[in-house]
Image (cartoon, rainbow, N blue to C red; front, side, top):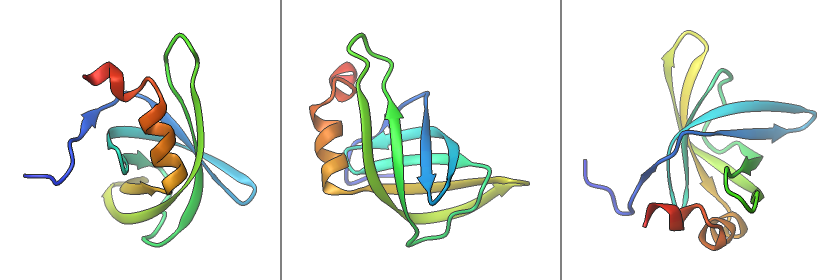
Length: 104
């Protein structure tokens, strides 16, 4: 499959924050625009959420931003795959962080 933007494999977790709950999602890959991840709770397309990403780097970067679920599919029992598109602030934070530089 040909993609418009380069994807990077990333073995980490992000925290999805909504209302008074916090969910963990396992990141499959990422681009400058968002994350493909898996979670045990279904979040439908259009759902706005906040997310927190801790980057395993000596400087201990922490990214807090908002995202919108662009697509969501059922993978199995209590397992859903979704693409989260970051807001502009999140995109800028990813660009500034050391995360993408480690893939160069």
